Length: 162
Image (cartoon, rainbow, N blue to C red; front, side, top):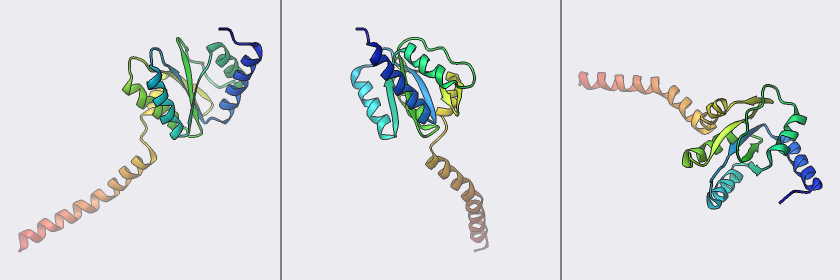
């Protein structure tokens, strides 16, 4: 069913405003994903403050061209969905979690990160950055490790002297 010119204008305006307020955008191919899985993914993304929308490639390209990001726009074959949010890493990370669950149906095609087009490999690299809580835990573990080793060494010395 064809979309009216007015509706196309609304979609382009929605995409332009989304690109303006988004810190990062992920382009997703969702071929063959069931409605139930899509609904589950949408609700999980929404809980993380990430918007997810399906749009025609021509309308998406029109909105992207007006935004004028740096670099070369990635190829966008097949069905296209967009995930974006105010957090730089969250859209890529959360979509990647679903790509791991449904590898035959979901694929990251690329994205926009800090005002620059990124390839699928670059977005996958960004997606694998751990959350801030995990990074803090690793940092605390690194700080604690030498102290813990000194305590173990002193304990062993005390055992030998007794």
